[in-house]
Length: 363
Image 1: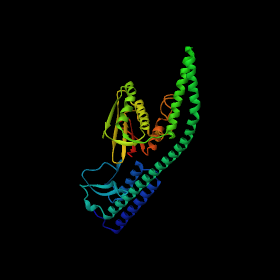
Image 2: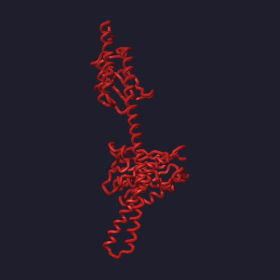
Image 3: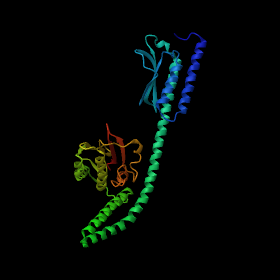
Image 4: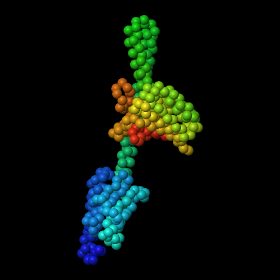
């Protein structure tokens, strides 16, 4: 079933060149790695082989497994490996039904064409992976610039608010001590509680702007974690939520500010409790290697939608109801971890929920 004439061989060569041209156009029009582009590519490949009415083209790369039609069983096939940055990423195959064809029905030119197409697909994937990495890096730089500017602004705001809030609180407590009218006392209590709440916000602003003095010391992690959990015992009990504390190494030591790390734990655990359903479990996992401390907090809550994952560490961004939070908790956490030369990341838990992972240098 090999070609027997020069004319037929020429027709096959034209089909191969047309295929490469079509694939080049398909890729140039695409603005992302998507299933439609990949499907258009394998349809073009199908038409380039000599016995195109009987072949099936299969493409497998990472998250995609496409085929021009259901494969016949059994088959013979030509195959070519797809590499991205010299690493195996997938393959592309052209199948024939083995009852009708044998390997001699494939030509060397067709194998060379398939190898070229595999290279084109690898370049296509690499191009958009590089663009995605650049876009992510650009967003990170922009976000860091915004956070830096906000840090300078909030530091000034916090200092300006501290003095008048202190005066209001002092005089309100003085009036309450000297007052005997119960109705006025109730109103003054509201004022005092509001000022205390406002001062907590100011404290968080100062944490966020790194204006709080940092005291780094080499110390054991376990007592800090245990203290934070014991302090939040009533928060867990209100929703009948269990916590599971897992230390891969009980004697982990790290150079940290214990007060700031406790603040990080408070904020992350309170958020996890808020998001988690009753009678669920929150896992706290602590591990280390030769260089870093790793702290994970895993919940089975509602999770964080992809649309807001990049915003959750921004100051004043909150998904909680009004008056429930000021939107500074996670930005404070981010600031503290950054101040420890570490990083914090978010990923989805399985089947539901969120996992916050903190990585801090041990020294």
